[in-house]
Length: 141
Image (tube, rainbow, N blue to C red):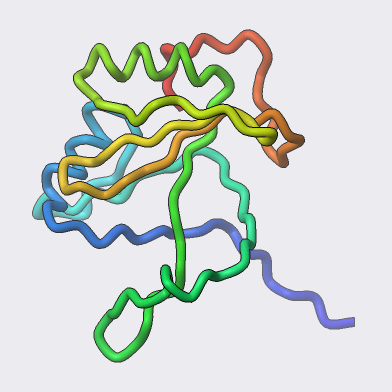
């Protein structure tokens, strides 16, 4: 049997109209660790991730990119105490959409300085991520 090399991570790309401001947001507001590749080009460490595959709706799939159509994708950060985290981030002047309750958890969204919308949710379903019980929400990711 052929043994495959391991996939060691994922690299997510955001195409931003204001990458400097969005990088500062991830670094200064969300507190994500980063490496500086020079000239302000920061690569951020992300919290553990899951991958969900949803049906593609045709009206949401027409995002042109040079020579190819972009695949449909959204970013949603998961947290273990949505209300506490929203309170902390609001104190840093982050604005949120109304919190919604669904059978899979509670969620909201916020905008990066460039206008990119990021989802934030507290799952009520099983996850592949081991949330540590009692973790202080002020230690953002």
